[in-house]
Amino acid sequence: MKLLVHTGGGISSCEAKESRPLSETLREAGIGLDLRCGGNGRCGRCRIELVRGDFVAAGRQVSLRGKETAAVNACTCFPAGAEGEIRIPAASLHRSDGAVEVNFSPVPDLSGGPGGLSVAVDIGTTTVAALLVEDGRIVASAGMPNRQFRFGDNVIDRIAACQSSPGAQRELHRVVVDETINPLLAQLAVDPRRISRMAVAANTVMTHLFYNESPVSIGTAPFTPKFRRFPEVAAASLGVAIRPEGRIIAAPAISGNVGGDITAGLVATGFGASGGTELLLDLGTNCEMVLAHRGKVWASSAAAGPAFEGANLSFGCRAAPGAVEHLTLSAAGKLELQVSGGGAPIGLCGSGTVDFLAEARRAGALDEYGRLELGVLRRWGRLVTRNGGNGFRIASGIVVTEADIERLLKAKAAVGAGIASLLRHAGVEPEEIRIFHLCGGFARCLDLDAAQAIGMLPRLERPVFRIGGNTSLAGAVLLAARPDRMAEFEKWADLPCDLPLNSLKGFEESYIDGLLLG
Image 1 (cartoon, helix red, strand yellow):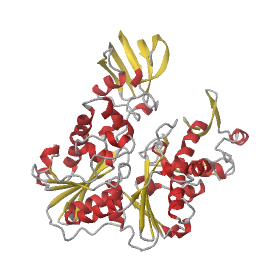
Image 2 (image 1 turned 30 degrees about the vertical axis):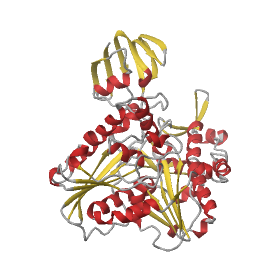
Image 3 (image 1 turned 90 degrees about the vertical axis):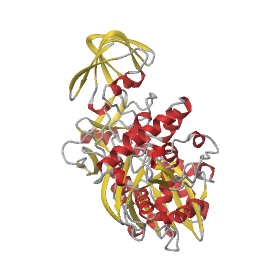
């Protein structure tokens, strides 16, 4: 098929084969779609409009002659004629301008190492960040999306890709090295071939893929990784564009679900140094947590899902220019929006959705079950009804539906229930926590009052919380500058008792309670 493609940037054309979904054809033509689910037809983020031609969409024949259009998922749509025309809305395009967190607190002491040039890399599921270190000083930083996004925005889809295709593991490794890490190195202030050492911190799946090792065993019970401690290797063996004989080292993992990124965070934050009860929580799609109490340490993870990263929401988005980061709602229904970069809003990022739940509940627009108070919204002029469902109008073209709210409640319930269950297992009351380390880019933007109001975090005094930012990168930069401290990383990887949350007494009850808004 000769395919005519309309985007906000103009009109282009490409050849589309009947055997390939349009999402793949468009990617090869340089048009990246938002394939949050890896092209498995679940997330609905790659919606396109069929304008003209014959297609097969989700197994159904669709024929259009220019009089009407049809909205379909590009990942389940195939050409079925000689000529066709489509239109791609801006919301369906993959954005490469999302924020990459390179800040952290506290900054570790990097002095006393072997010196020279080294680089620290935090390989996140959605973004990758790098810091260049010279003689114990951070001299440059860079960040970009993890180009593995086309395989899905979560580790489950990437594991599934490795299970279903014999070449997927090799391709995932190639993409993270050739299309992500090496371009990042080129953005730093020196010739990468002068760099003699790289330290990596990542979740267990991402570390396996970086090493070109299979993560498949992590996806099925008992979720045992092939490696927890990763070998030190020469850069050339992995295709990394530093000095060929330069050394690659990686933070060791605690378990299949709690990776080296958490180990790095434990070391970087000085976790446990107070001698009192401490909790570290890394907020993300998979919320990892570590608890220290009376000489014992436990680790676990809560599957919050990608809702706080904007996936599966009608108008959700990642933190990027145009994202609503914070909002307030008056008793009269007036909204004040804080938009990243200013200008018109394009959607709500994670911190904005948390604010929405808290503010809408406080102002009486949501009941305790997360259902919209229709009378209130009508009075405010914010009620939207479409396709048989109700929604809350945030701004022109931005509506939060009751289905969106349900997904957000499930995400916050998973986090809250995970914390409550881990504390209960250890016999700890929330008020016993002396230090609560909040890690990750999401945590840096989070309004603590809003997160506590909706029950995602326990109600604690503000000084208890320490916002760490990208503590995975902080640990990686410490390991890059001070490789002699690897033994400390290995100690923390071996110390916690790994607990599956769904095996803990009371987790299901806490999760069900967490679906409510106080």
